[in-house]
Length: 303
Image 1: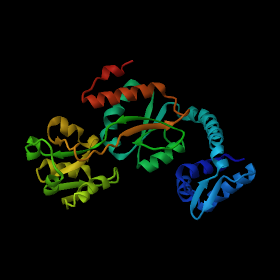
Image 2: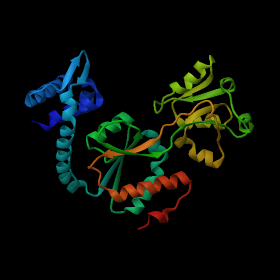
Image 3: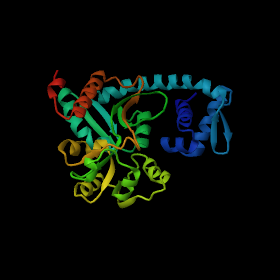
Image 4: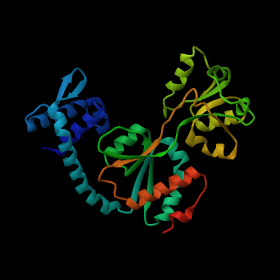
């Protein structure tokens, strides 16, 4: 039995697709199929039922999952013994774009100050790529959207909910309760980058049979914020990107929880039994607390 066959099996289980598993492992689909078939032959049982392009786990396949996970985990632990000799003083952090841009510039200097013996490497990528790199042990810890994958330890750390913001002095600032009709009448700045599901916002107007005034459709947060600050529109933006502007009073948040709430927390995730930087984990929690409070208390990280 080859460890690569087990990894192919678990990738198909996680991603529910031979095509996606092949992309994640940088292999061809026939190679993944051949590895699964060889594994089934070695085990003497069928792990998947194939219906068109769908791969459905058999009862035997479901029963085999914890054993495959255990073998892979043990192999990775042994492999990590040698890896850590080469980079024992390095920690690789992966983060989605918004977290990389708005949280980690605050956190990394504090983490370095608390752990001067460590070198920190940052990889910014989409949530999908972060998950792949995490599963392949290419990063130690990932800041990303929530994921249901097995074998991953995760903890919700940062609030990145979508907020409605306006420029100071906007009429909404003095109003209690905003209606969908009033929102639809305002010039809107829509920021779209795939970081969160905008269907919820579109659906808000669709259900009310209203057509929103989307005056600006942009794919850059700085542009969206600049347009809103200049008084040329209002918009829905992720909290991490506007936290400083809200604290400085450059943007004003309008409570619209009565009509819509879009929660999208950022989690910290790592493979179970593979991330052993317990001190770093505690320091990360401290930096998150400091970031959320909006002030620096570096002395908490002093050792």
